[in-house]
Image (cartoon, rainbow, N blue to C red; front, side, top):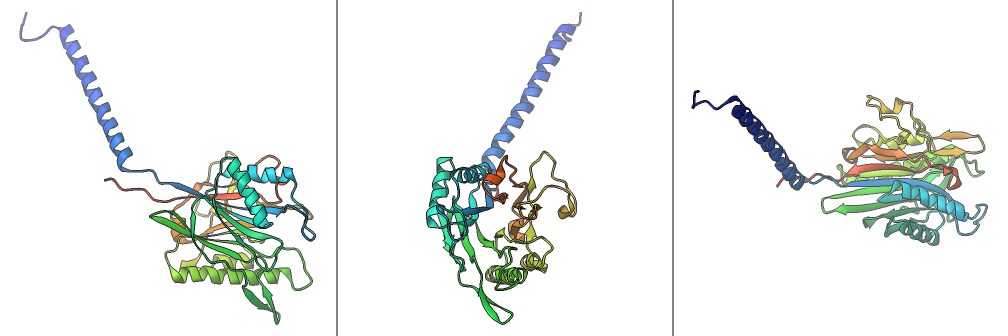
Length: 331
């Protein structure tokens, strides 16, 4: 027997021991790398921004608008709680009393949005509201903007809310919330011409944001009451370097978000409003982004809420878009 060479059984044991030791070392190294990465690179915080026309959210009847029923209010709260927004823009909120009531309802459901803004324009019945988990570090309400149409001067009916929101020490954004003239005919002027004129005023405010900071993180959202190729929407979206991106939220119905060059051509479900008189389902609510804000946008976390009995709360459905703040670099 060659004493310098171990028996076969011993060699097998040695190979087994070596194999276990090598595997354990590789596993340990992988675990150490994971720990280092987990400590050195923090996941970016996700911020969710939503818009919702809550349709005549009144405590009591106002003019021709009815009071909101208890069941309808509950459905509005349920819809918002399902989205879990960090920032929420509201249209057709009645006033300060109704905004405070809705905030309390959301807090009771586990969603605390302690910071807020209420905008009162020429139409003193319905208002634009903003609720936020983060501080509103600046507010520039647009409540008295006017324009000339056919020789007559008009005021933007609901005004525009414009607020700067600070998420953390490294990230803030500007939000402009709007509710343009509806398609309902009125005797004073053509509704489409009024809506286009309001859209032009809104675009002036957007351009002012770009003039103050070409790299602004800007979100423009709300009930714009028209379709994507309409003159008001084309006006608001703009052109060239200052063009806004249409996030086009769609239902989460199990379909994968298609990776195509032209997402606006995808056949998915994007309607946000039901017009009862014409039995028409259409997309008239929007979340639009500046290019810098678009760089933080998370398309897979952006959608229109599909909820049973959604119409009990409003004739609109809420939509939400999500954004990353930043990813910290390794130490």
